[in-house]
Amino acid sequence: MVNSQKCSMKFVRKKLSCREIGIDCSYMVTASSEELVMQTALKHISEVHIKKPEEISPELKAKMKSNIKPEQGTLWFR
View (cartoon, rainbow, N blue to C red):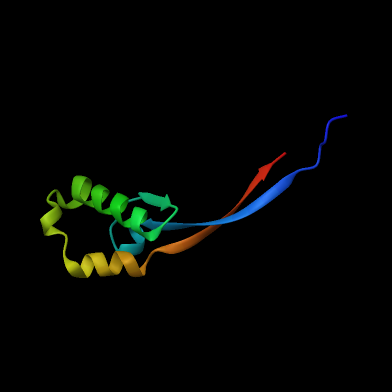
């Protein structure tokens, strides 16, 4: 007999979008930690918007960090 009972596990990831920091762009990053969100978002900003990583101001980095939000979800499995 096959067990058809489903199980679930809640998780929280972190997310940040360009729009949340005032950039007109639909890019959004989600990751398991704030550090990974920051790394990925900084890479995107330097490649697409600013072009030089050294031109990313401390103020923009602070704005990014303060706008990282939790994203809750549920994993379903059998």
